Length: 440
Ligand SMILES: C[C@H](O)[C@@H](O)CC(=O)C(=O)O
Ligand SMILES: [Mg+2]
Image (cartoon, rainbow, N blue to C red; front, side):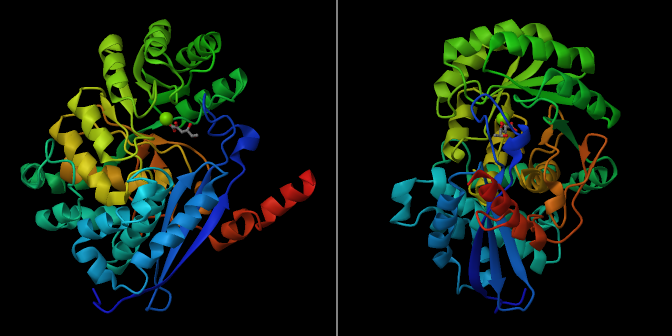
């Protein structure tokens, strides 16, 4: 790497896509999501070379993330890329732990989402400089360097640096086989695209049939608002997909603990594989209680787990059977690597969340890293796929017969077409100007 390559500027755009107009992405708590992103570009001293990153939001409030990223940017602008990634775990820690901004978290909420966007852009830049897709950059790192990217603070009673090195060492001799397997068959995925809460019964049927024809084997249905509706919708989807394919449900935090147990009991006739976010993402003990009561149906959670400490507790208390990392809620690859390593140590499969804009593009890299270097298994592993907004990305995900294929372009895949930015930046983009004028 050219050691003088310097980050010269950080620009941030508030991008919003009006997905709520057709209920795409809707669930029992988020009834009108406009899939959105605070989108970062890090310009550099090398003309034409930039790093791109984003954090996922739901519409209103994206501007708060934009402001937080602008505040954090002073930690990277003027720095060389080499100095930032040399001890990347420390860089991540310094961004997540600004001595004043941390009061707004710490390591949670808007400021942590902002940290993720900024760090995602640094990872993208590093991968571009090395001319590798992000997953390949990380998969090729020497074990010590990979482990130095992790922020181990607060993990000591669950995962040490030594544990991490041992996990990597155990997987080392077989990693090339797994990498070549990914090139051939990809990583298994599931679809949520047929099951959004705001979709009509007819649309669910139609989308199930379409997904079956595309080779999907795992389906997720949104539930939690009304039991009778859930029973009817689950019956439709089970009828369409048959008895042998996997069905998961997602309540998006809608229930009290006892209510979750009873609701799942009512839905268990549809042979559920997991129940996702049954209650508050902060209620670790509640998750453990639900997990015990509904077994063998598994509890899955993570898309709104604010940081690695919550994941640590969920794992320590046997509260989850599926660990759903989120590429933008955790503090980027640095914090995610720590969670992947903990999940491996506790023998819990990682099934990343990807319902959002750009999240499929990101998890595509993360599952490759997990399979090649850390989790090293496909047992009970599926990554989420949703079929929205991919055409806005310069290098969109490639999914074949229900499997994510390894990205081939250099970087972390978050770069968005300039034309899309001009249409969907908020409020000045042409699509929003049309809508704002129509509503005036
Ligand atoms: C608001 C989002 O679409 C959310 O429903 C995504 C989600 O829970 C998932 O994909 O899982
Ligand atoms: Mg979910």
